[in-house]
Image (tube, rainbow, N blue to C red; front, side, top):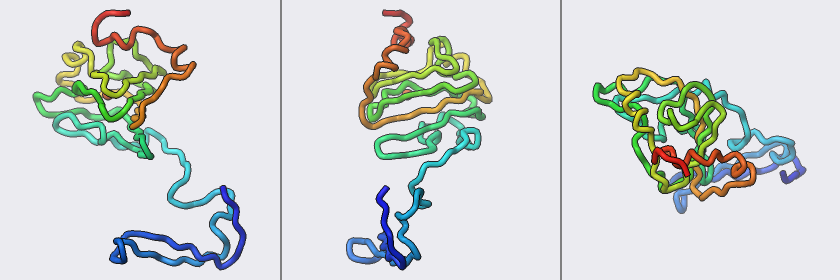
Length: 189
Ligand SMILES: [Fe+2]
């Protein structure tokens, strides 16, 4: 971080308003320069968030992924899938529908419980999956039937969707089980 000295330091904050170009400003004067610190208590700083404090949003029919979103950064989002009541329409299919996430690569980390949509694929606690953008995927056929009439899911997973393509590093390639990509086809390589 840039260090700066000084007292009675002016800090100009631009924000939306009725000024030229829709921008106005506020002039703050601080005793010391705000950069003259080890950390900066501004709006952008690292902090921890206990995933169990996240409140899942549920609905009558299946809700789209943004209801699970907890963080958003430049070119990525982070979503939590947590124990929750599930879709309560009498004809609802609680597991996700098939999709191709054409705008993002999708990394899932299965933290706890029993991830309903991926039953029968070898996915377990501690697994990490990568669904590249454009790769159609969804629940196992048996998972669809098994989910009908379910009132709640006991699953904990964290998802990172990136809006730029990901590449596998050595660690990722070394831990590839070689079969997951074929889970939907019902066959192996
Ligand atoms: Fe997906």
